[in-house]
Amino acid sequence: MHPQLPIDVHADTGVWTTDGLPMIYVPRHFFVNNHVETEAVVGREVYAPALYKAGYRSAYFWCQKEAATHGIEGMAVYEHYLKRLSQRGWGLFSFTSADATTGHATVKLEHSVFVLAQGIAGVPVNHSKVCYLFAGWFSGAMDWVLETGGSAIRTTSEETQCAAESHAHGHAHCVFTVRPL
View (cartoon, rainbow, N blue to C red):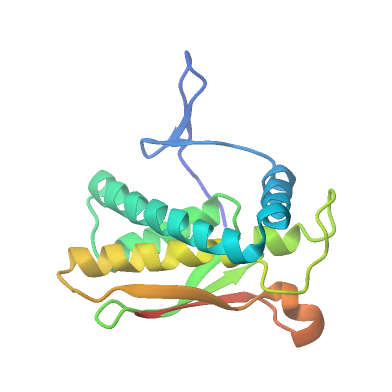
């Protein structure tokens, strides 16, 4: 994949933008170490729902802005979202299935940032579902598609398979399942 991601750096402020949205560029180990330490302090049972809500809101907002910026709509926006996530180093995202009429989708994630960081730069090895941070993103994007298409359906999303579990279960990639509430 040759990303060709448009990055603009403002000469006076140093602010990075892509498609008009401000961005932050940080090393993977920095982000993952902060994520792991926050989870350790507050606990996954508190942290995961907070990340879900924040991720949901952010994905919904992103879809709204990108649709306007690029003049796209519906599932094309969601597909663009997965492409941009893949171009930003989070991993390679793709649909295994998606149906905007029912609110169902299966998102495949290969080379997840959280799986690749296991055991590197102080990140502990964890054989559980470590990519849960992404779950809210996929329901936020689907709900944007549904709402802008006139549907009252709203969704939820969860990580149903993680490549970090590969030691015990042999998973080659992560899977997120989006379904109606």
